Length: 93
Ligand code: SF4
Image 1 (tube, rainbow, N blue to C red):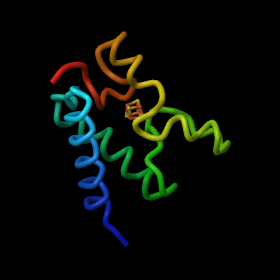
Image 2: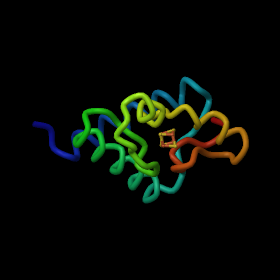
Image 3: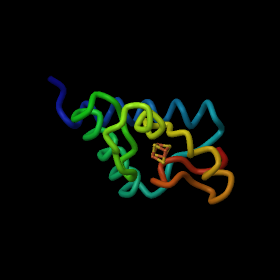
């Protein structure tokens, strides 16, 4: 059984790698970043997959797959708003 801290480290590592690959950067506010990472880690512990912490889980596997981080919405949101809905990923390196 992993501790929440260990799960958070896994999520952080995923987020860093994904951001680097896509040319995004992570939220520069470390407290906000930590909150999103913790939200993702808790969902990962509870559901086995990292559902977006700022979206509602409907209980429908097909629909809910769309909100597994990185969700299907983030690229459009980053283009339009400069960051994804949770403010995990931001536009630009
Ligand atoms: S809004 Fe951001 S944090 Fe939430 S699932 Fe999409 S990419 Fe991940």
